Image 1: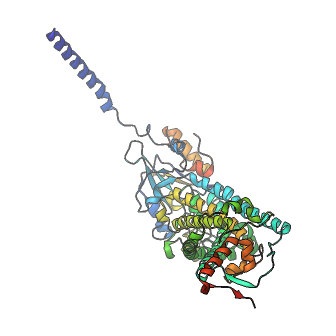
Image 2: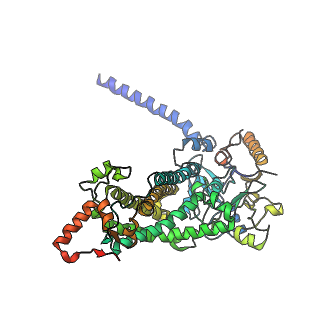
Image 3: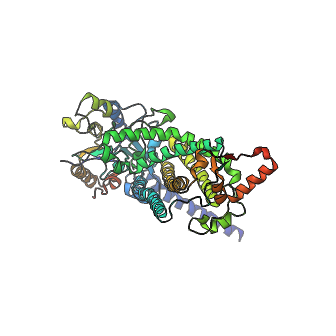
Length: 335
Length: 198
């Protein structure tokens, strides 16, 4: 039995080896046919998935040139000329429309109890510096940014190609350099105001009453009402996001490859469009929209009546502090 | 007027990079910028192909569409050119270009971009044809002298074709039919929304 089994095993081995040789011979003889296996543009294009590029090896030093075809450039173009363009315009236009209608219907929010003539300090010089540093750089950044989106269609036909190119070139320089004071301003605002912008009791009631903006009594608020707190966090997070994406756009070497640059640019544009629209409303309520409000950031002092009507809790807290330390009385009579 | 195009017959390209060198030399292209480059796909594997690529002078060019200062224009020969006087170096054309053609000399602070530079199809810019200012900004204007782009003219294997789109497509079609294979008109689908059907 054993000898039969080993004989069979030997036979199987011989058959297997010769079969292997027989198979191997034509494989070795068959030359690789590069033509049959050649890459084709169509196949490579069809195999591409979102954002990818057809690439290979390149012998020049610039390795980013190794991408041969990146069809996603066309997608970026379509998004840039479509969604981004309209989002930027419509976001600001929509807010402006609401503001105009609100102003016509409701008018400026007056100090109902009349000026008290007593001024109290609302924002000290550091706070005002942080605010105006951010605000002034933001306005230039926003205008130079908007110019990139709509200038070609609005300003170019008005002032001609050469002047427009010069304005836009200056805008680009301003955008690059004023980004830094803007970042500093956002960081400063965060430091001086974060403790006043945490959720407090009364924020919910303020929100439920919409801050009295749509009629009804003005709900009491702390130093910052719930709307201001939301604005604070929108500006801080939006400003931080703009800073990060902006720095990546400024130093493309930090931001990976072209797909990341495209994404960074889209994010920067969308966040900026939303932030500009929101800040329009902020500018409205801090200027023509509310009597007495501008003084807070303008000179730093507000009228006591204004403070009582808009930030009743804050006035209470101030009064309590003052009664504890009377020397800190900041009220000064009006002239 | 002709509709000028490039067509790289990758089955003939031997990756000699002569087109790259000729372009740099002819136009005295700034350091660090290559208006034309050769990319080898599937390097070292069976069926590898090398393709010479530059600006494809697209139909409905994406760079021109996204340029915030509208500095691009298309010539009567359908060549996409731009004005370096208007360009602000924002980089949008690079984001939009499917071929990586726009490049920027690093001139300003932050290593930020200078005026964009790209293949001109050897036909200069908005300045007067063949003048000194045109040469300094854009390179020579061979088209004004009745010559085709140098990269294609000196291609040793006649892989890189330049000229009227219909004519070079016909040359390529004939080659593919005669030899029985072809890896495609690289970039044509993306640039011209069409390809050379064989």
